[in-house]
Amino acid sequence: MNKKQKKNLLRIVVSAVLVIALSFLFESVQPLIPVQAVLYLIPYLIIGYDILKKGVKGIFKGQIFDENFLMAVATVGAFGLGDFREGVAVMIFYQIGELFESVAVGKSRKNIAELMDIRPDYANIELDGTLTRVDPDEVETGSVIIVNPGEKIPIDGVIISGSTTLDTSALTGESIPKSAKEKDEVTSGCINLSGTVRIRTTRPFGESTVSKILDLVENSALKKSTSENFITKFARYYTPAVCIGAFALAFIPPVVNLISGSAAAWGDWITRALTFLVISCPCALVISIPLSFFAGIGCASSNGILVKGSNYLEALSSARYFVFDKTGTLTKGVFEVTGIYPAAGFDSSSLLYYAAYAESGSSHPISVSLKKAFGGKVERENVQNIQEISGHGVSAVVDGKQVFVGNSRLMKNEGIVIVQEHNEGTVVYVAVDNVYAGCIVISDSIKPNAEKAVSELKQSGIAKTVMLTGDSEKAAEYVAAELGIDEYRAQLLPADKVFQVEKLLEEKDKKGKLVFVGDGINDAPVLSRADIGIAMGALGSDAAIEAADIVLMDDDPAKLSLAMKISSGTLKIVKENIVFALFVKAVCLVLGALGIANMWLAIFADVGVMVIAVLNATRALRIRK
Image 1: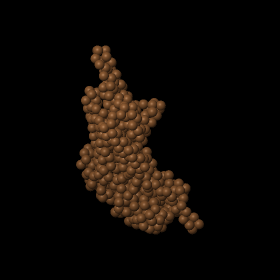
Image 2 (image 1 turned 180 degrees about the vertical axis):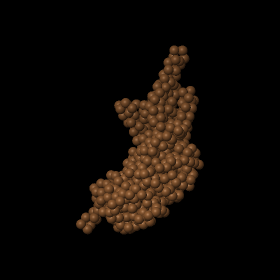
Image 3 (image 1 turned 30 degrees about the vertical axis):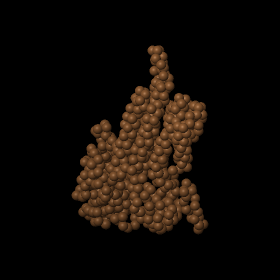
Image 4 (image 1 turned 90 degrees about the vertical axis):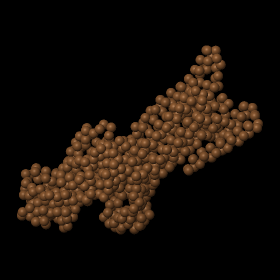
């Protein structure tokens, strides 16, 4: 408990002790009513001064019909009718409910707070041979920072000297340390566990991974779910309605009795009206519904799943169609040359030579794999006029010869006749001076959990899985067959992916949501177009992460089924709270209007229901596979 919670607990205990003592005292001694009122007023003000203060402020701000107003009217009314003990008891139990809610929110905030702890306090920069601590915001891109064992990596960068192991659990939810050595990229927010490393920063602090994650989490509460919006609108109309109902219950029956010649029984009807007010307080719904989603988002974040808003968490429970990118999403995105097939007049060395030189200006994984397979140093003066042909490949002049390197569409556009090689990977075709020189097969291995991810999604009731890729037909067919994906589309440009997703959106069931899972910069438009966009956070591009609604921080596709379970589990808890609270209140309101329910039942209908709903909401923190 924090300081405020401890203070409130002390107020509850002191007020409860005073009420019990006064109750026993007045069993043996019967002082005058004014004396009892003054004595009971002491515990009442101790426990309820803040509620009365909020109620008065609400009136001046025009926010009259809230729970503070209802509690103030009901308890002051009870004092007016001489029910002093009941008036104090209502306020005590209400504050007990508020304390439960505060503790529950604090518990659900714990996961978020632990995530927020990844924010680095400083960065070490070497100046004049000594280490100087500076604010991470002051470190420019390209600067060299030193991270010692036990310190957080403050800014994204590349290790230029040293090796270590990193604790990435705050980012990915994975407890196994990750080794990092020279030339490895490292992410801000990780904790350096062993050796001292020197890191050259690759972006400013404001654009680093840790800053973006914190921004996503801090803003997640701004995007309300449909359920939360419903409760907000419901409370806006419900509270004034019950206040009017209570007013009518207090005055219409007595007036009718007077007109008919019967006793007015003002006290009885006013008591019923006050009981009605206490029962009607919508705290259970107003508090427990947002808390359920907050707890669900906290549970997801502790498992390395960042949800940008409760509306996306709710929408995920209705997901029925999953569309995947291939490279970097279902596969590792680590390409290796697995086959070289030179045409007549060329050999393997010359084929790799032309391909590597033509691709020397690109950082695409396929280009990197070609340069790695070539092995030699690329002499930049031997290559000129490199041009990237979007969705097709590259063209360049190598040793004075026009070279084209790319897919079959590029060859077709240039009027070059190719020989299709049977393979299970990506085929890169090479042409030199408009003569087919051969092809190079590059394979990308499937992620270990990809098959498990697709299988678990199907078990959870997904109607269809589709894979969209810019890769070759053969490579796409192989991956789809290995993973059990229902349909695939190959050789797609970025615009083609958007078109395919829009087509699937038109064909799908209206109630089912379509989810797109991707990682590349060319996936950003599709992530935005889908009902729900999920990006791979560790290897994914910044554009993809910005466009996505949910981010998987460890790139593990198996987390998709966990995200689905957290979503459906959270929504189930929300529905349980709504049905339970409305049912109990409806029954108790009828009983209160009929005079059957007394103030103690009213306390249960308000505070008891709220406590039960809040405790139920915290179950969302413990949702697991």
